[in-house]
Length: 138
Image (cartoon, rainbow, N blue to C red; front, side):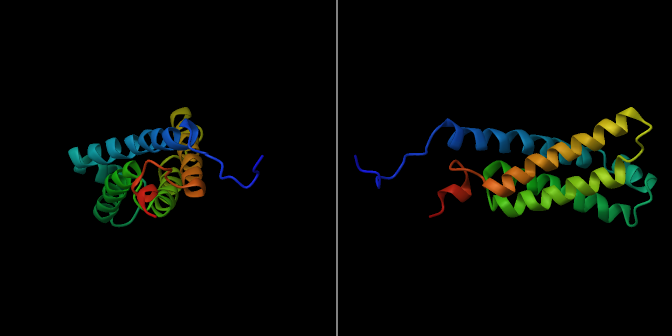
């Protein structure tokens, strides 16, 4: 028996699952970014309500991160860098917008963001998988 033969590690777990995970995470960001564009005044008002400086700039940056990052994550383009940026964005969102733990809704949203950040860390660690733009590079 040849123990030096390459092992075929291509399975559903290594090809389809990373793609499905990226699609699920990116959907959240794409929908959130689109809703920001659909109601910019409401989003800017919400940003102002938590006391962040330059709410119009924060609005533009958040929409950009969610839409461009969501597409990049979905396609698996520069996946680790994209997931790293989105990880930081997601934790910042939790820290600035969901810290009133006396409000159960805010409590749930905070830990939802922490869970999303955890999923993004897995993407940072393991990359986009074989079915991604990154996976096509040799």
